[in-house]
Image (cartoon, rainbow, N blue to C red; front, side, top):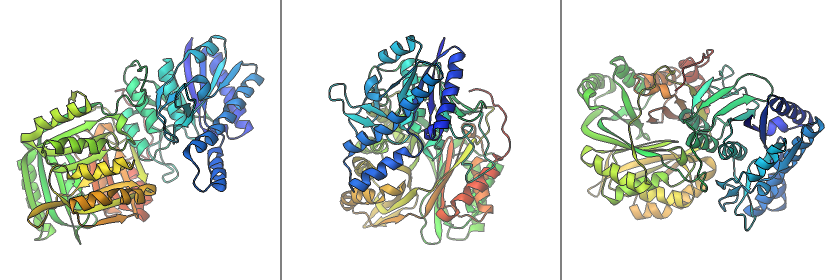
Length: 592
């Protein structure tokens, strides 16, 4: 007999009829000879209703009382599902997080799971019962019994964590869509179901707003090798399979906080090409990177920071062996862009990166990296970030020291660089995030420790930063070099970020802080794009042909993100989704 953990979201249990349909699906699984643990969310919009009630009573409700209130939503759901199963003749028992003893951090509203004892669940399963567990909640310790909630996506997180702790054969996430889609079907009706997706791809897509599976749940699945399937609650379609590594024993404590960073990567064969004063108009990036793709030159990092008047700067890296060919091609293009355009080349560079699923949504990881490098006098030439990686370009002469410092700081090994993944489509999904704002700081001193000072202040205020771009453009102020640094945060965190930065900006004697709320981030994600020329060019061409100007660019090995005007965000998503052929039916791809 196997063990299956099933999770049903709020829409799946929104009405009595839907709860009864869920009970029928659970019963069918039991009749196949499986033991079943079920995790359910609050019914429909219950959580939103409870929040409205709290704010009607108190404009600023204490976090503890909010958790006490919000945890009741799941308690209603689990009792009703257990009752529905009992009515079908299937023994069932509902258990809250407190009754199981799910131990979390003492953080109201956003606690992370530390430990899940499984004795009570196994006892009930051995009696032939279906165990129905309240997702989204736990207790801060077995001594104080303070109720905590896990925050957004908490039921997903509860389900995958339970599957890890129980050693379940798989975790099935049931939702109101047929699986992981290539993009948001509300914006692009032709979105297709992905038969399978890697953990890295899912982490990027989930963090970009693909709400089907929360990043914390993916992180646990990746770290402990939990097989996960995302399926529709309404059909028997197979859904999407999450490709996870081999099973790993979970720790007795610190389940969710044991692995923030997995390792450090080094690519010591990079060269940088920097173009300044490039006309800021649609199609420029497409023209440049299209030419590089046609010459089969693989580009790694691509950085475009904030505009300076009517121009912009673009910096990118290639392998040192491609530098001479790249420079000739770029200098042939420059006369078409105007006399003001300049090109500088740095042949001896290295890219050092920290990678890890655990850094998703954790303020301070990037700041810790920048601080570690700054403490030993290593200056950062370029910065590029994604949800699971932070990369810095440094001088080749300092690469070994940088790797040693980061390996020691995060207590992780040095990993080999990513390799090309054969057989996969270069792009598996596209995403739009319209909930971000861009903050740009002018004239940040170009010296070790400056970036660390800024992002440590944000981390201390618990502001999560998404894209981070350090400009190529250098401005000399009183004989000292400075650069601009731009980054994005959630719209709700803008004022918190502004306040947090006040002291740091004064300490560094920076110029101005500007805020732009009218931006959107469009991204493409795919493990198959590693070392495959032309992917970025194809994205930029799609945007350029639609007349959409790119305001910022940041890349990692498996993701390319562009900031565009917010009012053009949906159009941008539509054109890049079509540009990569993601609106066509997808076949099964080889496992990796």
